[in-house]
Length: 96
Image 1 (cartoon, rainbow, N blue to C red):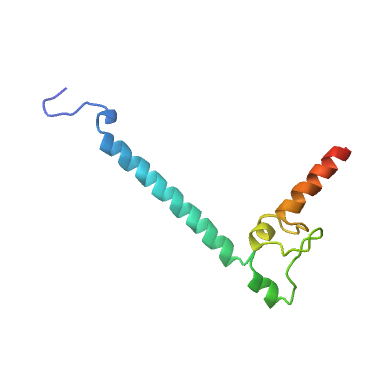
Image 2 (cartoon, rainbow, N blue to C red):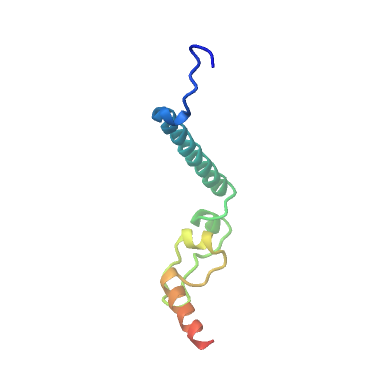
């Protein structure tokens, strides 16, 4: 190996490793933000979309409370809020 050539592995430079991790985390966050923005742009959820279509908000079949937008987006066509869905699933699981 020639004089002046640094043959030490990258592990001897912790700041370089941290820079790589920081860049990876920034990229991951950017990708997540882009995916969320695309989801919103497609108009797959939200009260405004339902209002524009003349639809009433969805309400839970069991407790009558309004089903949050986040749940309606995560589980399209859901008929129950999270708490009532858990109870419903537990009851039906026992019947099997």
